[in-house]
Length: 165
Image 1 (cartoon, rainbow, N blue to C red):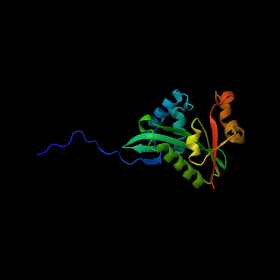
Image 2 (cartoon, helix red, strand yellow):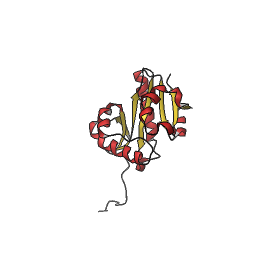
Image 3 (cartoon, one colour):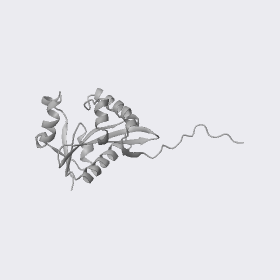
């Protein structure tokens, strides 16, 4: 009887984009800590993540959280893509794009007319229909959240905005 090929690997499962669940919080926290340590986003505590769990979506691959992103609502018209991260082992597979598309879909369902992000990768957002805008055109974000940030007077992120029609 022939032996099975020991070098063959299983095809990865189709990624599933879904709302985050309570059991995902430790994995989301771990991903965010990695990016925060690199200075690419602000850290978030486990407690914050539990309180904002309903804002988050994840990409799950083979039962593992491979990426996450959140929709934060500021006003009746403005939301923000936040905490968008992809595990290094899953880079380049379109998971970031899938999460932003899911956040856009949710923003539209909720009736938001504008979606913004502060980012170090503006070209990524430009490919998804966002335009670079001056930060002062987003006072809801600047005076609601940014003013509390240690980088407030030296913010090096780019503001991007997408109109949702």
